[in-house]
Amino acid sequence: MNNSKTLFENAQQRIPGGVNSPVRAFRAVGGRPPFIERAKGAKIWDVEGNEYIDFVASWGPMILGHAHDKVIEAVQQAASRGTSFGANCEIEVEMADFVVNSVPSIDKVRMVNSGTEATMSAIRLARAFTGKDNIIKFEGCYHGHGDAFLSKAGSGAMTLGIPGSPGVTVATARHTLNGIYNDLESVKTLVAAHPEEFAAIIVEPVAGNMGVIPPKPEFLQGLRDIADEYHIVLIFDEVISGFRLGLGGAQQRFDVLPDITTLGKIIGGGLPVGAFGGKAEIMDLLAPLGPVYQAGTLSGNPLALTAGLTTLKILSQEGFYGQLEGKASRFFKEWAGEFDRAGIPSFSNQIGSMASAFFTAGPVHNYDQAAKSDTELFARYFRMMLAERIYLAPSQFEAMFVSAAHGEKELDQALSAHRKVLSQL
Ligand SMILES: *Cc1c(COP(=O)(O)O)cnc(C)c1O
Image (cartoon, rainbow, N blue to C red; front, side, top):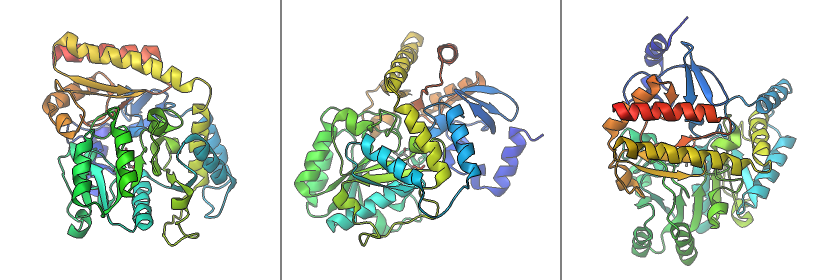
């Protein structure tokens, strides 16, 4: 049988870096990534049979834990009816209903296959709607790998220290300006310098790709006000926060409504799904109603939407988020406290069931502050945690997720490993 070592060697012969998404290569933390054979609940197993407690959750989607019985059963039944029709099917209507009823700012929604597709389409729409070209994003926010977003991006770009990307034309890069997260003045300065030029402000309403950074109280409303004043489309990229911080996402939690919302991750229940939606007057610009082209061979795929919608229906059960967040808050509080007890400088951000502990005394409210983290120390910590069979994201700048499947037993086990590793660091 192939083990992780041979598999990774073989993978590197045929797949660039041995991976289909860069952070999986463990470059930022060193060591060799395990190959995963199966997952269930809060646990994953590698091909050697090692069992890990998982806090990556496939980078966010697995809020119910892995291989939830109801989701798997629904997917199996859907698969037996055919995996793709390239024609309308009922579950697309059900999914649209669910999204429109859950997310306060969405009147109409279109399904795509990834978060990247959702944000690319949202920007195109915002440009068409406003007749303007430039966009503002924020340093350390990640919006997928579309050309427009690869400047001072978070997630893998930040982890690997890639500030922009070759292959993006100068003309494209010129249209993206970066603000500072949680700093309204930085946005006002950009807008004041080019008041007629901005089509969109795109933001993660809770940042999750430079580590978790919640918005300061006035930040999101301030963006809403600026967007209104200058006729700019406000886009909330809720690919992580959507259905993570409640059915209505961050916009409901903070009571600030964007014009367009992008969704991904949880909405696919572990299959490839993204979505973007918003005000009808904007969404109706899309073909075939309007002139803005956007399409997808597998968009609205019945198998993927079945996984997604089955997941979302479970999330909508009374008390789901209260219970998850109560458990997660108690856990993360203990987690953060262990750094103090070990005398290791750190700063923790937590909101709902997502959190990050930065290896810096902090505070961490923006990219520059997050970037002060001691990534060498994090890397050592990460490898020791992995040896304790705790599977964390292989980067200081990613979120840690607690799922509904994490029981007190798993959380206690993770805490004692964390305590042990910090004491040896
Ligand atoms: C993951 C992510 C994306 C990209 O989604 P993919 O499905 O990986 O293309 C976009 N925006 C945010 C906020 C994300 O976290």
